[in-house]
Image 1 (cartoon, rainbow, N blue to C red):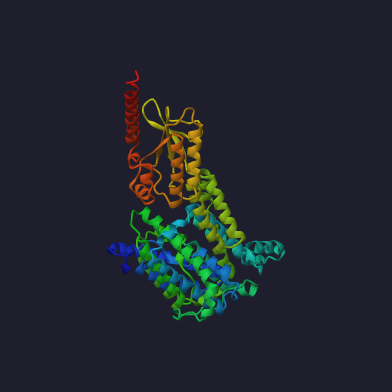
Image 2: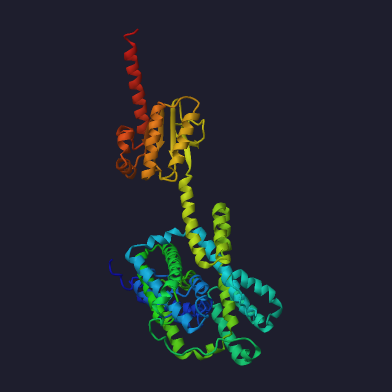
Length: 568
């Protein structure tokens, strides 16, 4: 494994660019601090630990990662994963809960390091954009419902998202009106600024205004809970205070976080690299993500992830390198050193309202609409994924998302597009549905199979070929398989083709393959099919295949005439 390139996400950098990115870092800090506090609330952690995600993790990724835009900090998806399972092992926000969250981050860092060592970055490709939209939509509903009780001033103890929703409905008469009014005001301010002045840090304005009002009018005395004293100073570095016996219960949680971090970070980094026509090194990003989570663990906070929302913020602020993230970390450090006092007046419901606006943004209505318009089948997969996240849980949603993505791909390979090629009056070959009765010419059938041959679709291939031959209006003498899309052939498929060839030969049908690429030819050699089919029956081009058929028919006709001539 090669050593990562240090500061690849920053260098080369000119002075003008450094100033521009530093200014963008100030804007990023203004928008990220309230979100980080909200994400800590989602994760079930003490609120102030959200600030710690904007310190060493940012520095680690800026040093070791390759993406110039990706913001690696607290994120709603991984926070929801953490809270969904960890709350069953320890009281939320307790010392043990924080220690277990630190161990989850440490195990996640180890998994990311292993992924880099074994070059497993390709695993990020196994979550399709379709199910990722469904997954994040489900997380949006789950998170929105999770904070809704606090926004209404209710104490919710229901299990699961549906249980919480049911309890909110049953307790609607107990809503604390001052808390509801404050929550509604925060949501209105944030959404209005997001709609009409997206460059302004709406969450920061809401937090600052709420702190001032809370201190001036004693919100705590009016029954609106506040977060209370926030420890002053930088986090103390230490390994999580837990035993090895806790590891077994935490590995599944860390594995879920690992999958989410791999997929979401890679997708976000790629999107912004393509937008700006830049390269991104996924292996270096894995190293940066691993280091960021390791430092999150030892600094008393929870797992960090490549955040799409915060990455969008930093790009919109004009930043073009990780200098913006380093400036954000410096600002947060100063905040922890000198400005923690005012944070004690911040109402819990304000953070819940900010998280609620984030959850609303995760429900990707436009993306779902586009998927429905372009691919109704994939739209159903997205809805199923979202429903599983809401009804069952985030971890199960991730696994289902990966399984559905793979099954959809396998389904395409299992039932690929197949055609019978027919030449029109202009000499061009046109595809027709591969149904019995279709033919390419007198005694000729040109059949195209649109996927690699493997154990799952080999019988389907053989059955369709037999149906076409048997259903042809006249006896088929030549069967040409256009193998341009057959890039590979496994052991089972090889045996199936061997049996099919024998059956066709007995029926007087000669089998030829056109568009045989080198990889397929190698598979044919390895499975000893080249000798069975005959090397003379494998061709690079369809034109050559048809030319060979014409020559052989001419030779057979000449031989037949030569045999019949003496009789005449």
